[in-house]
Each structure stands twice: as structure tokens, then as C-alpha cells.
Image 1 (tube, rainbow, N blue to C red):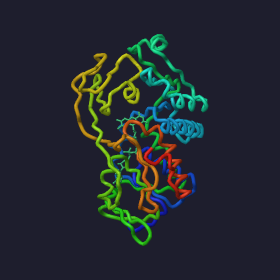
Image 2: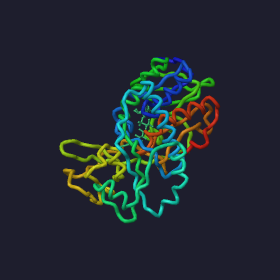
Image 3: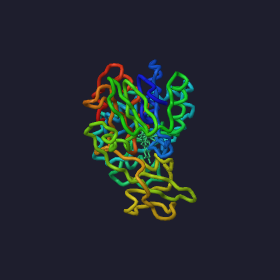
Image 4: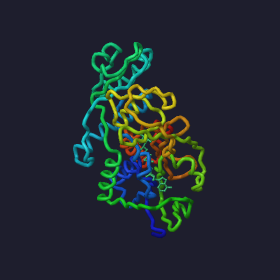
Length: 340
Ligand SMILES: Cc1cc2nc3c(=O)[nH]c(=O)nc-3n(C[C@H](O)[C@H](O)[C@H](O)COP(=O)(O)OP(=O)(O)OC[C@H]3O[C@@H](n4cnc5c(N)ncnc54)[C@H](O)[C@@H]3O)c2cc1C
């Protein structure tokens, strides 16, 4: 493929890129392409536990998750996302002293009509005796908390977008992007394409390499270490912050078998795991504050960026796609989402 011209090129077909692709196709942008290097099996989306919940300490994240929940339901009802949620509940534990800090968060969930319950240590012990509840430990219980397969989710969005005219270009490793006659030229080793607008959705892992692509930017990122752990005969890849929530993400809870804290701390509550935790690689990375980036890149006309981030952005992806779509149409940053 040489010098083919597109209006919009999305780099990266993880859950964020495919949500943006769908949003762009839905908005009627016909001449667009989504590019991936063909290593989707190594992406954050492929490793993700696909956990969906709404409560977040950061109220902006809570709003993202709430909007995302509504969009997901709409797309599932239409048959666009084929997999159905099987609500299995979700608990988010917090120190009881923090309760007043979350008043506005709970208010938002209540106004949206989203079901939740605050469990004190004593109501929690009655309802979920399988967990160890410290006296100062409370939790937000979300009965609709659930998970989906992030890979199935992305594939459903990609095939719907393809039907609406989005071109999918696989096995295309973007290794340089430059300005060319008022457009962008996107190179791989063997070919190049042109695009008027570029949306970088190559995941947080792409952030450190943006300069190598020829783009001046001021974003920094850190590597996220992941561990391989053995459960019975099954190997699981988990991020380095093992906690109840993460285990829930990884579809292991809520149940009797819990690991609290970092693997080094050996705070394993139940002997369910065999072997040692092996530090294997960094398949994902995250921005300095573990937050995502979405919006226009400063100094780059018609170039946008949208990254998911460590541990927590599958559940925002449809909403990020929608916000990028709106920002693209308005030609403006969605202030609230930039460095969300
Ligand atoms: C272990 C783990 C568990 C998680 N659990 C949850 C969870 O339970 N719930 C939740 O909400 N979030 C979770 N997350 C976070 C969430 O999965 C990520 O935030 C999200 O998947 C990031 O999506 P993305 O599309 O931005 O990036 P990615 O999924 O990494 O996708 C980027 C794509 O771009 C491609 N690409 C990169 N560079 C190039 C290039 N130069 N040229 C062409 N293509 C390129 C990659 O191959 C990849 O396919 C978890 C993350 C991890 C790592």
C-alpha cells in the first residue's frame, strides 16, 4: 500500500483504538483507516481482566465509567457488542475515614440511578463473610460489577466499523510519521500512507517512542511490571499491584482466594497459588501518574492521542472513543479528558 490517502488514520487497534474507530465510522467519516502492527496478542487489551465497575476515587474517572456503562448497555442491546455481562458484583474497599471524601462520588452514582451499597465493616462481614474485614475497612458494593472479554469487545467493534467502511490495515508497524504537504505521512519499513488527521492509540507503551516517530511531545511514561503466577495448572499474567480489586479484574474473585499487597510482601491469604511469582516483562506502561491522555497533541495540528492506562481503562474505552469523536468534530480538546 503506497501513498494511499485517508482522511483519518488511527494507529493501534486495542480497546481504545477500536472504540475510536467505531465512533468515527458511526459519525460517517468514510475514508478512514485503523492500523495495527499485528501484535494485538501482546497488547494491554489482550492482558486485561476486562473488569467493569463504576466507583473510582477520582470523580472524573467515575464519570467516564458511568457514561461507559450506559454506552455499553446500548451497544449490547443493539447486538453490536455480542458478549453479555453476567453481573457478579464488585467490592471496592476503602478506609472508613475516607467516606466523607467520596460524598460527591456517591451522589453522582445515585443521580445516575446506578445500584450500589456502602458496606461498613459489620454489614460487610454479614454479607461477605469470605473476606477478612478490618474494623476500619468499608466497601462500595456494586451488584452490577462484571467483566467482558476485552479482545471480543474490540473485535466486535472492529467488524462493525469495517461494515461501515473503516479500512483495517494489519501488520503495519508505524515507525515514522512526518508532515507532508499539509498532511501526515505514516511510514512502516516497507510502505507509507497519507492521512489528514492522525489519532495515536498505540497504547501507553507507545508513549516513550513518540519522539522516535518524529513527533515532538512532552509526555513521559513509566513501565509497568507484570508478574506471572501459577494457579493450579493455569498461568496468569497480573500487574504488580495485587489487591482484591485487581484479582477481581482478573476474574479470580470475589472468592476465598486472595492475595493482598505486592507479591514481594508475600501477604498471600490463602494457599491457592503454587510456585513463585515470576517477574516477566513489561507489556504495558503507564503515564507518570498512572493516568491516561486523550485530546489533541500540542503543537501538532490535527494529531490526537488517546491512551488507555495501567489497570483501569478498558472500562472507559467507549466513552473515550466518543469524546475523541466529539473533539474531532469540534476541533477542540475535551478539557476534562486531557491528562484525565
Ligand atoms: C494485566 C492488566 C489487567 C488489566 N485489567 C483491567 C480491568 O480489569 N479493567 C479495566 O478497565 N482495565 C484493565 N486494564 C487496563 C486496560 O486493559 C488498558 O488501559 C487498555 O487495554 C489500554 O488499551 P489501549 O487500546 O490504549 O492499548 P493497547 O491495548 O496496548 O493497544 C494498542 C495497540 O496498538 C498497537 N501498536 C502499538 N504501537 C504500534 C505501532 N508503532 N504501529 C502499529 N501498531 C502499534 C499494539 O500492537 C496494540 O494492538 C488492565 C491492564 C493490564 C495490563
